[in-house]
Amino acid sequence: MWRRNYNLLPQDKNEDDFNRPERSDPAILSSGTKAFLRYGLIIIAACTALDSILLLALGYRYTKTVLFHVDPRKLETPSTYINFDLLYRNGTKTNLRFPSIQGLPRALAQVSSREPDKVDPQWPVSYLAPYGSVPYNDRHLLVEPEISTFVQFRVLDYGMENCSLALHIPEYGSETMEIARIGSTIDVWSLAVDSKVDLLEISFRTLPRRVSKIGTFTPRFNTTELLPSFTCQSGTYHAFLLTCPEGARKENCWVDLTSVKEKPVGLYMVQHQTI
Image (cartoon, helix red, strand yellow):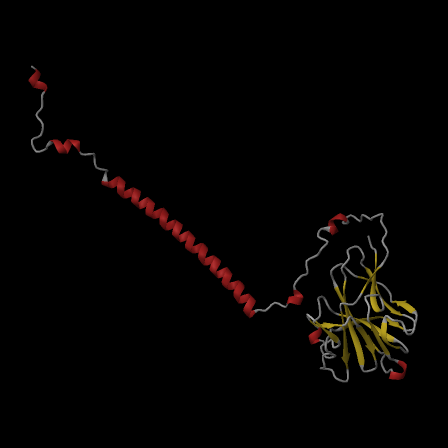
């Protein structure tokens, strides 16, 4: 009876065949390999595309820097009063009252109508120190019929944005001046500027365009004169030209003033509180 349920082992297989592990299905192995390769290629393609974009961006920046040079004077100067405008947007006024402040010129240069292409040398007077040549702290205001003075200011303080030009000439022989010769009147013109002017390029021919005449000084010893005020936003540049009235002669238009100390002597700008 029991022999009926007995089957003989295949004679073509030996014992080692039964001890071997089962082989993986070739079809399953093939699909897994394909998926791995597919995702690998996608990652490589994405990395290649990203590298190409970064390379193009780098090339664009390099080309823009080399071929399209940016004038440093046109770059925005960071403000030290970030978001102050937000505090006073709704017209809020402070209860604190501050006195006016005086700002000295950032640049003074002479230009000559007789030599329209001449560039006035900067800091022509200096002294030799152990660490090099140091310019004297002098501000030369010279106005004659053929010579005018270019001057530039930069407004720094926030909330002090009501400005006016001032001319202060101390008494004759004051220690704050080296030269003081005055006579008649000088006209003051505002110039069209919106950034720092390169004094190494300033000549009578390259002067910025005149905008308007803002007033007239009548220099006198031991006297301070103020011109009408104007709006001067914090961080902005303002330039002016001091010149003789049209048709004036040297005997009735001649101002030669050199101030040598860090004091509001000669030409300077007064700023009044506006908040």
